[in-house]
Image 1: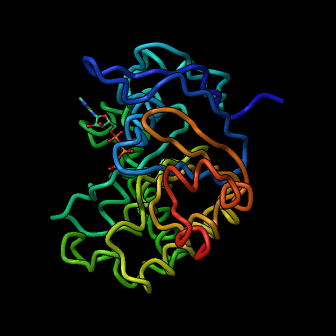
Image 2: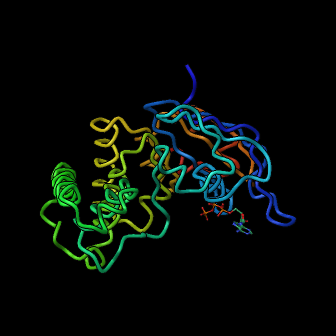
Length: 263
Ligand SMILES: Nc1ncnc2c1ncn2[C@@H]1O[C@H](COP(=O)(O)OP(=O)(O)OP(=O)(O)O)[C@@H](O)[C@H]1O
């Protein structure tokens, strides 16, 4: 069986700097993968290539999407998204002036945006579609216990809730593969606990494969099935949480004895 995502010898060069160097990795359907490494290791640069934001300088990325395999290199980010990838960013990118419900609805509307004439002419099918999108958005929010804040303005919510709304919004496009860039950054322990439950639920109930970049080692060690470790642009290790904890090179390069023991 083919992998959901196959990354072969990918390199990203910025001028004289190799931000990512000859990285190969695979992600299988249903996995929860963590990508870790010190600041500046190249994690976000790798995410940007995997999701079509930047084309690699060299190497190949293949996504075995719903409609058959596509080469991510050379595709626009929106084409990659349409093929079944969804993503959140380090800095929250909600429409902060809009309600929680509208944020989710917009993501769903985007999914069906090819119906330009229906929208312009306000055909009955437009109203039916609007109604079903609203119902679907409400159901999604209810499922994650966010229905109580669906009318709140997104930008006025506490940080942890904004983060959760953003992740749930990313689900609205029905992705096969979800990328989360440092979802726990800036969270207090209660918010991190709620986030952990949310990610578990996404995997259990939505059949979505997840890859996340994260510095919070206790979250990584408790959630991830496999971990990839980047250092100075290169992959230095891959394995289960237990294997990564026991990997001397990882400990020396990044985690430090204390952090490993803690996980
Ligand atoms: N557009 C760019 N142009 C030039 N250099 C860049 C660009 N983007 C990233 N870099 C450099 O590439 C290296 C990797 O950065 P990247 O942001 O991918 O690391 P990271 O592992 O995500 O770090 P952090 O954990 O701090 O987010 C860094 O040295 C960074 O300065």
